[in-house]
Picture (cartoon, rainbow, N blue to C red):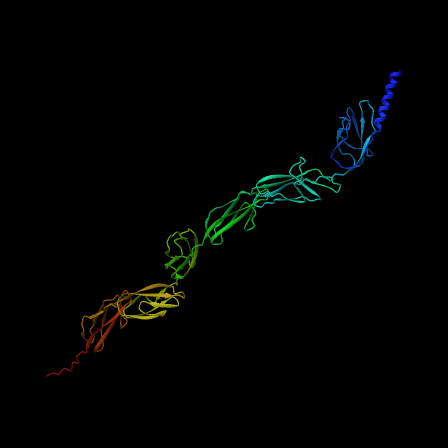
Length: 498
């Protein structure tokens, strides 16, 4: 080493010793983990500064500007392990001499955990929730993350917002060491309500008609009757003006209500009636309807009344539908009981008789009888004295007062007119006389002869009556007589000779 080098080294040493004598110590500082803290020393011209963090923990993390720039200030991001650190700065002057280190003790404490993401709070414009709540201790509310002052401190923040919009706020939590957590965002989203619509298949129906209601404009629905679908069919079972209501909810849970009024008209009171509810087979009956404006019977007749002639024994039902001015309709039924007819049969002991003969007329059994000659019994005995055709009619009635009629024709024949003659009405005993009968078909003489003529020879003198009965083709008969005067023979006396 030459003399010049020794002199420079000595001077430098003297100067550096003077520099080392300038030491300083700062008090202990508490620092929150994750914070960036600025540090500064009093600077000397032409000096540089060496900053170091000295600590027992082995994993400190990242330091801002520990080496460069080597100036009088530095910002340090404290994100190492929790513990105690020494922050050291050494001044190096223009001669390269290092000063005595200046040290500050740093107590790195935990930062509160960031508040769990809160997300959006959705509020409906018609049901505003202007207050936001965050749990924890020492909650700070900010309008941004730019380091502005807190706009509120506390758990519940009344934003005062009511208009449709999205409002974003930031919250932190400060622990007992005064460390503040990272920002967590919370937003208040005030949204509009759904626009509901409700339609009906008709706004004017008749009582007990089917009605179809359809709601739209929401995501889910809750009807007045508990149905939760967008549409439903109901029976309009209450007359008058009916108001149907549905509440709709959108995806945000916002509600709106829709309603529709439906006029339900009462049904006409249709009544079917008849003059008679029980008739006999073959009868016609008038059936009528009332209580409506227009009518339609089951058999197609469009009138308030009609005559019907049921042909089925038993109950016959007739239905009528009546409609009013509102075209509402109702029906009624009338039942007509059709009773069977009795079977009328009349018989006669003979239907071809002679005048003044007696006959018996007999009717089939019934509850009552009415003959055309006034008799009311089941049978009657008649003597017919008028020749010709006689008709006897009986009407019989059963227990239902239904009737039937039958007739019998009686042919009443005149008796034949019999004539008897003799070829001689005055004869002598022993003489013969011829008797002749006319006017009939068959003859029977009182002496048993059956021919129309006979020859007789009376053997006694007297006035003898001969009778004959003549029967015609109708088996009617009559008789006739003839007298024959039979004279005795004269009794001639003895002959005397004068």
